[in-house]
Length: 184
Figure 1 (spheres, rainbow, N blue to C red):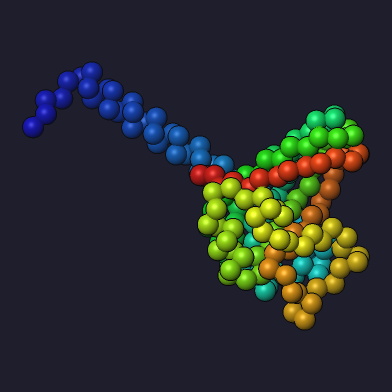
Figure 2: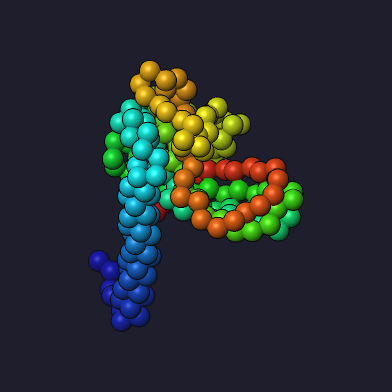
């Protein structure tokens, strides 16, 4: 049996308290992401009504409620969100993007990536980092007036919907984005 000294007890208690506080910080981030995801889905259904059919048919969806982009020749973007299967968050992801070209400004957008079948969802979850276009082909829907999807027209495995644009980012650039699983 170990003999506890006052110094040993204080060190153990301090380490336990630090660990407990660190876990709480991550929990708060997770709850904040979950709340932002719920708000983004409500906003998407209001602004882009045809997405209701995608919501109902998807095997899973990656919701990035706020991606902040900025650039002056060189640019970057960052955001965090969660992967939902059914309506439950199963993993948390970040997006990091870099760009180069004629660009200036700051903009925030929301993005939802719909995985329409189990194969596409499994392929996404199997990789530690994922890039749209390079790792999985997708269809970008960024014009709500031109799009109309139903069970007869959904043919691709992955759809990306961008909405809720705020701010102005003007220019032409080359961009690369990477989605990475994070612990929250």
